[in-house]
Image (cartoon, rainbow, N blue to C red; front, side, top):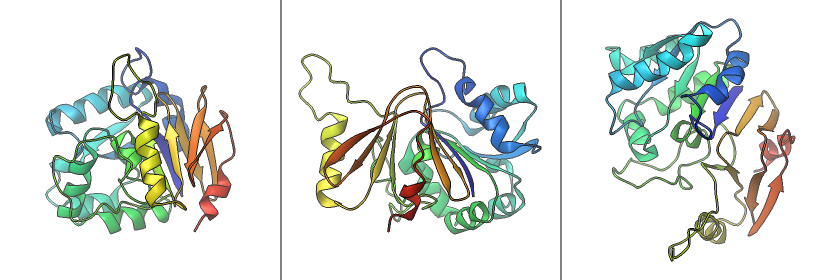
Amino acid sequence: MQLLLLSSSRADNSDYLAPGLAQITEILGDIQRVLFIPYAGVSVGYDAYQQMVQSALGTIGITVDSIHQFENPALAVAEAQAIVIGGGNTFHLLHQLYQHQLIELIREKVTAGTPYIGWSAGSNLAGQSIRTTNDMPIIEPPSFNALNLLPFQLNPHYTDFKPAGFHGETRDMRLNEFMLLNPTTAIFGLPEGTALRREGNQLHYVGTVTGYLFVGGEKTPVAPGADLSGLLQRP
């Protein structure tokens, strides 16, 4: 299994997808054509979304086909050399994948070795479920169960910043609520500009800043480059 799960499409004031281009090049190898799934896009049209991704990946010689332009989405997935899923609203993304009956097909395809690249909502989707997304549930998918390519939860764009005068829940408070109800399920918090990379049974944290593992009510710092392969063995 080959996974690249980016927290975000940008870091600081970078160009679109620029922080992940080296890693994308590495995971794709000789692949020059990818299937993009834009279903997380709500405020941006799918054609415009494809053009954004094409402009970014075109700089490394990649051609981007978008699933919305195929008459048969399932066939597009079946024939894809690599699958790329972008950010936006995770609930809308999952809803559309269920509508097109693509969840199992993508899971089987990626499990068989097809590279999977996601960022933000696309990374959320790779976990057990989308229950630790930051997004508003603007639409109700048939289930919160996701691709389960990793046996734990993800929280992209992780930060516990609390603005002065803010009295709502911080990210840590929300993740703690999840842990209270799901004490054995791990969550990995991905700060901006970081990623998880899976190669077979190996999983590593990629980035220059500390990430965080949440499980059983505990928050543990994770150093850049850390080997997280043990998480793949969790029940």
